[in-house]
Amino acid sequence: MISGSTRFENSLEFANRMDENDPLKAFRNRFIFPKVNGKEAIYFCGNSLGLQPKSTQSYIQRELHNWGEMAVDGHFHGEDAWYHVRKKSKPALANIVGAHEHEVVAMNNLSSNLHFLMVSFYQPTDKRYKIITEAGAFPSDMYMLETQVKFRGLDPDKVIIELLPREGEHTLRTSDIVDTIKKHGENLALVMMSGLQYYTGQLFDMESITKTAHEVGALAGFDLAHAAGNATLSLHKWGVDFATWCSYKYLNSGPGNISGIFVHENHAERPDLIRFAGWWGHDEGERFKMEKGFKPMYGADGWQLANSNVLALAAHQASLDIFEEAGIKNLRAKSEILTQYLEYLIKEVSGSSGIIEIITPKITKERGCQLSLLIHKGGKAVFDELYQEGIVGDWRHPNVIRIAPTPLYNSFLDIYKFAEILKLSLKKFAYN
Ligand SMILES: *Cc1c(COP(=O)(O)O)cnc(C)c1O
Image 1: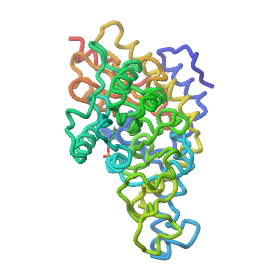
Image 2 (image 1 turned 90 degrees about the horizontal axis):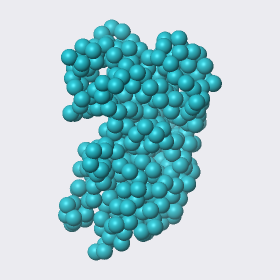
Image 3 (image 1 turned 180 degrees about the vertical axis):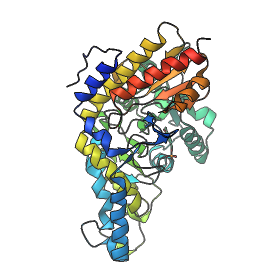
Image 4 (image 1 turned 120 degrees about the horizontal axis):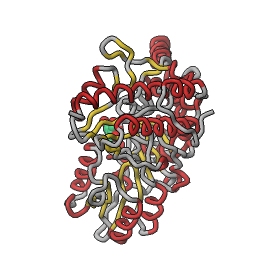
């Protein structure tokens, strides 16, 4: 078994030994790896698009078959009846985000869900109208906040408070976030930020943030695009009001695939909450009466709009079944060590040159699997060289390489190989 006290070594033997002793090693073989320059890639880009499980095709085929065989009858007949299809993904989603099943549902896309949730959970008044978010948030999230504020007839510059790292620092201190929430106290309507920052890889203390928001009478919501399937989450216990995520990053469900939402039980039975409704959020027993008067379903289901995307959910389920089998706690345990090994080897190969600065927090509980490497010299050339050698990471302007080893399909050997190639590219492009 691998453990947190493992002493790392910069050797092929060590990496191989770690893989042999990895209880999750067999899962790697469940995925299809892309090729770069004709060779199987070393894939560290699960933070952008997770790999395809080999089982995905058959899950989709099954629904294509049902559609062909039954057509419209498929909505209500057979064990896969589409009318109830959303229920299948609930147990796994609840485990992944730490929630009750009635608090989660798969629907729409992430950016759309951010908007729909804001309609309900951002209710500005004359006194309480401010929103706290992190500076440098993912563009969709910035556009969403800006336009939601305008939609309410308010001025984004007066409403949105951006959290900035201190001078000379790359990430936010929890104490500074907490102080900012307290400072805006009675004017604060909402904290809406990412759970895990896409650029720096910082995992925020969502529990403390939520607790402080509630203390001042505000709500807290999180975008978990980079946290779902990566970090250990306990949304219910932390009292988070709402959250949403996508399924194509760490959740390996395919490009652009369906998103999921979380709405805390505290809001499960609040027909008073304003929402942009659709028939699929209406009381399921009466849905086909096709009558006037929206009656929301209990819990997260009450935020659904449209009938479920069955093919999308099939691909999603193929991956969720793998998560259930592997267990989210086991995945996180391996992930912490993989990333620690990555950090150790980066330091080994870049030595005291100072050319690579890891801007992701050093403390394991303040990060997910991703490390963001700020390359002080020759960054793009190093990145391009890594790619030519078969390493798929990603480049973020102006000088950051993000490397995200995932516990389902990355090995310690992958990390060892990466470090060897990195060492050579640094020699070529950064040290001259
Ligand atoms: C990936 C990502 C998105 C993408 O939104 P889509 O609606 O799925 O295109 C939005 N926000 C964050 C924080 C992301 O990481």
